Amino acid sequence: MEQKTIYVTKPYLPPLEEFLPYLEQIWNNRVLTNCGPFHQQFEQALCEHLGVQHISLFTNGTIALVTALQSLRITGEVITIPYSFVATSHALLWNGIKPVFVDIDSKTLNMDPAKIEAAITPKTTAILPVHCYGHPCDVEAIQEIADIYNLKVIYDAAHAFGVQCHGGSVLNHGDLSVLSFHATKVFNTFEGGAIVCPDAKTKVRIDQLKNFGHVGEVNVVATGINGKMSEFNAALGLLQLKHIDKALSRRKEIDLAYRKLLKEIKGIHCLGDSGEEIANYAYFPILVGDDYPIGRDELCQALKDRGIHPRRYFYPLISEFPMYRGLPSAHCDNLPLATEAARQVLCLPIYPDLELSVVEEVCRFIAEQ
Image (cartoon, helix red, strand yellow):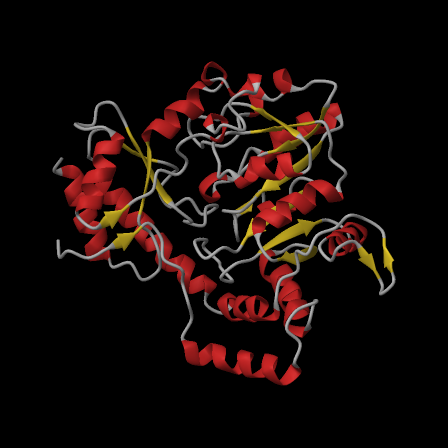
């Protein structure tokens, strides 16, 4: 393989000449933030594209998670998983909430609904699952438990842009869903995020909280934060929507190529089913089993030595970081499947302009170890 650096993802950017008219309009408007015209247009366009009723834009997904919890007045304990990016649990700590970790399902690497009830205590107020790698959680089973115990459900849907399940957007499940538009995501606005909510009243409260808790010019009703998306990010988002279908189609091609080429390699397991239409091909994770000739970390380093930079999403587990590992629920005996997945997972490069010849070379290299 020609020596060049290949990263696990690369942000898609439309042609610069397509973005320049948006920049010119921002300059002429002299409106840079505070829910300007592009911000409002982008919210409406996202609702139409995603098939949701209400959406509130944020400067990033982490602030959106923090605000989502605040908006529903979540307190006490929240059940979540350790197999995620650390922002999931950090948002709980920012709100003074105790995370309670439960194990994952071995096939989807999402929260295992069968583990939820045993983790519920009198202090439990909500469940915070993650649609890992863009694959939907078992939303029906989770909601059934939430209804029985009167718990809120907030989905970390950072990976789940455009994902469908049960005949509609996965973002319509739960009380709230939180998106990330970070540069590494399927759909990006450089930095950005959003909260999807089911009714106008909830959106009004969220909009107030992301603007310092302001109601009008002279009244502040809550300890909000500055979470507003800028006009630059909103404008890029509007432009990106014009290209997202093509980008997802290309990601699907790459996903299918990987699956075909890796299918016969002993010890390599591809997560998810080939051609699974409910996914958005956000990542391409493989599990490196014990029957593969070398360990996951050795394979990761060997690929890096060839200029290919996979990522071990998600290793280590959130529960292994210093601020969490003292929690009773963080012990590895409580999380055997998450611990095993974190030991085996390796996300291979996938992005729209990744050449299929590079995919072939990556798979050949994995096969030759």
